Length: 327
Image (cartoon, rainbow, N blue to C red; front, side, top):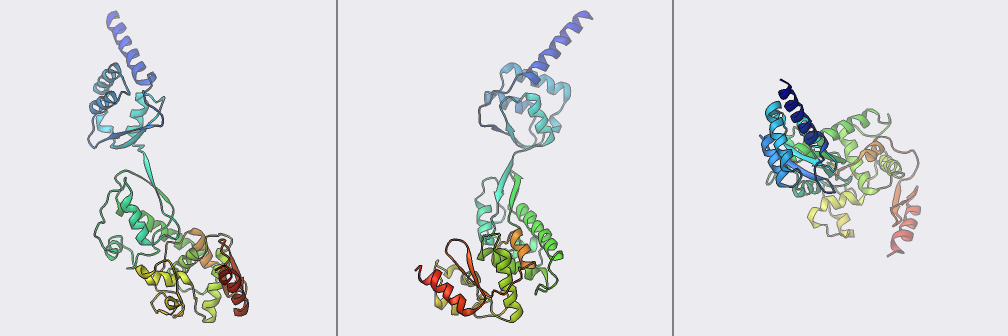
């Protein structure tokens, strides 16, 4: 009995050292271990040894530990970050808890849905399931009421494990946009001239394309809401560009402003039929809470800011100053 006690104590101490105190021999920056579905502790130990992260003695300790604990059924598939100084038991705890590496996709304010699909399709960690699927079918599968996808997905940074599908990410982004739009609509200014949340989404998308400055979004929203209230055309270039589609070559000409499309706010009154881009939170909030004032026009100064005018004469002077003279 004394001999058995000494041997078992020795084995226990050896296991404790190999699994809890011997650090994994990984380099910096952190390495990635991929655990496949159905991966066993034996397969993991073999992979760790083949990559030089553990010696043979630690692999043996892992095999013994696996037989004593039977944890293979608790190991979750995925990618795991293996850091310097980490012990085998710490790595196993991470795998059992499913704390996988998360990849990132940043959806930028002002992107079109076409750009979003392109970025999803090029992301190496996203499983592609939408090749050849039309936009309308995507909207139907996601259970979205609108048939047109523009503006329906919230721009932010999404984190996800490898193997998440493009459908998964679109579903999350659509749910986020619904939540953000519902929130800002519930907090809207009581006199905002919009009848439904979708109109706020449309206006927010125009604001998003007109300015990237947070200090100007509510001022731009004020110009557009006053124009809507007074029955003036919005006359905003980004809607014309969107309506031109692939015909837009980077230059907007007078003929383009006269070319009638559903999105040409120089030839048509009111809002365009759909959003023209993905608006962010600041543009959504501006759309439902425009800044009071009297300006009905604005023109770019060429430095990212805009000059706002109350009258057409003042606006024409600003155009000559900031656009014509610059050219």
